[in-house]
Image 1 (cartoon, one colour):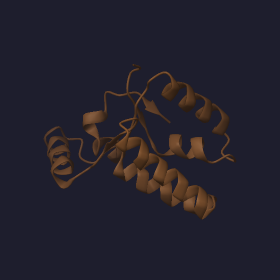
Image 2 (cartoon, helix red, strand yellow):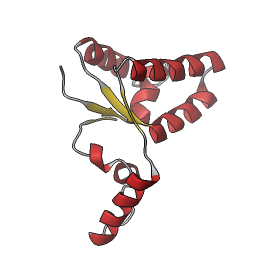
Image 3 (cartoon, rainbow, N blue to C red):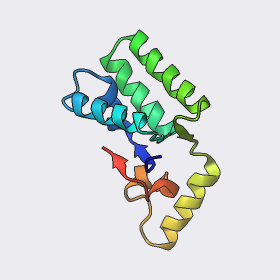
Amino acid sequence: MRKPIFFDSWGWIAVVDRKDPYHETAKAFYQEYVKGGGIPITTDYILDEVLTVLRRRLTHQVVVKFGEGVFQSARAQKLRFELIDNRRREKEREGERRHGNYLRNTRINLISPLQTLPLLW
């Protein structure tokens, strides 16, 4: 099994949107990664952001297909879907307050348990 990789918004968008300048690279990477046993990791916040962007760029049918694919993959344990709940968010904010780094790089701070994972975009 391959090392887990956190897929951020722009990685997913590039995989899905054929007009994205990084589409071919992202799609090839994603397909090879999953084919090799990799399990992508993402969050509810990321999925929300991706769906919002895709709704503006693509057809409703493509957006629905992508969203359903994410949840099917999660149910089949081929994707790890992390929920950013209030407890996790508050724990991270408290850590940031203690270390004098409050809310810098908010996207990463909200998912700090995943910070050690390599990011795709």
